[in-house]
Amino acid sequence: MTTKARCEPRLLCFPLSDRVSGVVNFYTEGMRILGERRDLALRQPAEDAAPDANSVALVSRDSRLSEVVGSVAASGGVVVEVVADRDAVARAWSRHGPLLVGADMAGTVMAWGLSARPGTHVVGFDAEEAARWSAGLSASVIVVPRANQVLTEILHDEMAATAKATVVQVDSSGGGTGVSTLAVGLAWAAARSGMKVGLVELDPHAGGIDLLLGIERTDGWRWPELASARGVTTDLGSHLPSIDGVEVVSAGRVGAQVPPAARRAVVDSLAGDHDLVVVDPGHMSAPEVSVDVRVGVVAADLRSVMTARGQDLPNLLVVRRGPGRSMCDEDIESVLGVRPDVVVRDDRRLVRGQGDAEAPWVVASRRWRRRCQDLAEVVMCA
Image (tube, rainbow, N blue to C red; front, side, top):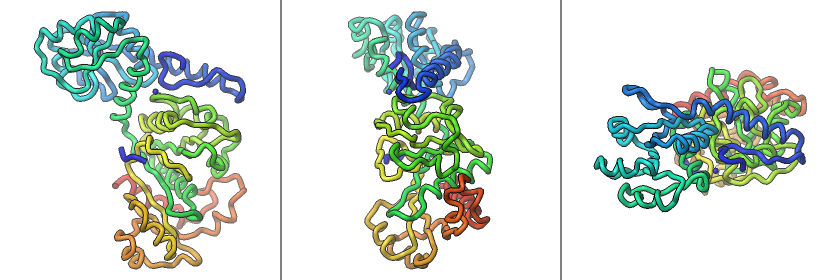
C-alpha cells in the first residue's frame, strides 16, 4: 500500500440490479445523497470569506457550465466557488490545488496577465474552443459532459487531499497473530475516546469482520453493494453497519469482485469525514489505498521475528506474547532494529468468547482492552 472515478455525474454509484437483495434501494439512496449535497455545491463566495477546505474555484459566467460542474461536485462533497471578477479570480489563482477556468472566460483571464499555475484546467462544452486557450494558460482541457469522469477524478483528488482522517493499516508478518481482532480493538478504543471511526475489511473474500463483531445480521452496505463505488461521498458511514461508534465495511455473505477504484473510493470516502480509518488488508496488497500509519504485528518467537526482518518495517510494531511466544523486547530489537511500541498478551477470554456473537471488547479482559487503548494513543501520536 502506498503512504499518503455510471450514473452520470455521480462519484459514488451502484448498479441497477436486483441480483443482490436491496441493491435497487441502495441506488435510490445514492441519488438521495446527490440531492442532499446539490444545493451546497455551488456558491458565490463573499469578498473576504476564507475558502472552504473542500472547495474548487470555477472562473465562469456561464450558468449552464456552472450547473454541470456543480452536479459533479455535489456528489463528492466538494464546493464549487464560482468567481468572475478580477480580484476574486486573483485570490483563487493564488491558492494551491485545482482551478477550473470556463472556456467562456479563458480569454479574459489570459488578458489579465496572470502567471501560469499548476493544476489549472480549461472546462467547456466545445473541445475546439477550450483547446484554443490551453497553451496560453498552461492548462489541460476538460470537455463536459463527455469528460465528466476526468472532472470527477480531479475533484476526487481535491477531496482526498483534504481528508482529515488518519488511515491506519494493521497487518502481520505471518498468520496466527490475531490481526483482525487487534484491528477491531484499535477501532473500538479510538471510538471510545470520542473519535469518529471507520473499520474496513479490505478483502471482499475474507470471512467477514462483521461476524467477528457479532453484527452480521445488522443492515447496511457491504462489499457486494460497494463494488461499483467511485470517487468520494461524505456520508458513506451512515449507510454502513455499526457497533459502539465503529462504522464497518465488511465482506458479505456472497462473493464480490471489487476493483481497486472501489477500494480507494470507500477508504477515501470514510477518510473525508472520520477521525480514524482502520484498514484490515487480510492477504491483499492494495497500493491504491493511501495509508498514513502502518501497524505491524509480529509474534514474539524467533521464526516470526526472522520473517518480519525480511519485510518493510512498519511505522509501529506490536508484539504478541503467549505460550511459545516469549522472545524478549531486547532480542526482538536486535533482530529488527526497532523496539516494540506495544505488547499485547494472548487473552483466554477472547478464545472462549469466539462464536458468542459478541464483539471482542465485550468478552476480553481489562488488560487486553487497556493495550488496545495504548495502541490507539500511540497511533494518533505517530
